[in-house]
Amino acid sequence: MSGMIINDLVFVAVAGFTLLSALGMVLSRNIVHSALALILTFLGVAALFFNLGAGFLGLVQILVYAGAISVLIIFAIMLVMHSEPARTNLFNTSLGTHLAGAYIAALLTLSLSLAIWFSELPQIKGKTVEDAVGMLAQLFMGNYVIAFEAAAVLLLVSVVGAIILARGAKQS
Amino acid sequence: MIGLNHYLILGTCLFGIGIYGVLSKRNAIAVLMSVELMLNAANINFVAVNHFIRPDQAIGQLFAIFVIVVAAAEVAVGLALILSIYRHASSTNLNDFNLMKW
Image (cartoon, rainbow over all chains, first blue to last red; front, side, top):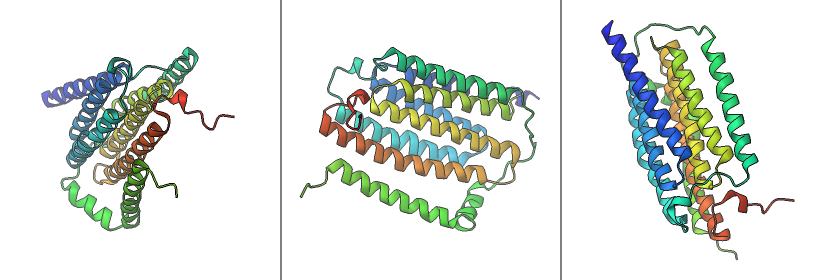
C-alpha cells in the first residue's frame, strides 16, 4: 500500500516538474533559457518513461532528445543569434495572433482533459513485460522490418538533405 | 491512485503548451522546439497506453521509438532550413518570412 502512495507521489512530482519546465520553455523571453528548459522537459519525460516501466525508451529519450537534439538546437541558436539575448524569443507582435494561439491551446487542452477525465478507460493490472528490449528487437526484425528499413532510409535522406540545405547548393 | 487518465491528461497538457508555443511564438527555432514538445506528449500517450492496456506486449514502445526517429529527422531538416533562410533573410522572425504572401 505504501509503495502505491510513493509511486503516486513520484508521479505528481515528476509531472509537475515536466509541466513547469515546459511552461518555462514557452514563456521565457531568452531563447537560450528556453532551450535549457526544453532539456529539463525531456529529462522529465524520460523519468515518466522509467516510471511506466519502459526503461529502454527512457534511455533512448535521454540519449537522443536530451543529448543529441538539444545540442543540435543549441548549435542552431548560436549560429543565428545576432540581437541581445534577452529579446530573442518574444511572442508574436500582433496581439491578435498571440491571443488566438492561447485561446486555441486552452480550448483544446480543456476539452480533451475533461473528456479523458470523465471517461472510463479499461485498465489491466498485469505484470509489465520483463524483457522489453528483446521483445522490441523481435518486433523490429519481425513484423515491422519494413517500417524499420523505411525509418533507416528516412534518417539517411534527412541527414543528406540537412547537409545540402545548411551548406547551400551551388547555383550553377 | 494514479491511472491511465492521469498520464493521458499530462500528455494533453504538454500538447496544449506545445500548440501555444507553435501558434504564438515568432522565432522559428522556438516554434521547432514547441513541435518537439508536442511529439513528446504523443510519446507519453503511446507508452502509457502500452503500460495500462497491453502490459504483456511492447507495441506502444515500438511506436514511440518510430516517433523519436521521425522527430530526429524532422529537427535536422528543420534547423537546416532555418539556417538556410537565415543566410537569405538575416532573420529568424517568422513575420519576415512572407515571400509567398500574395
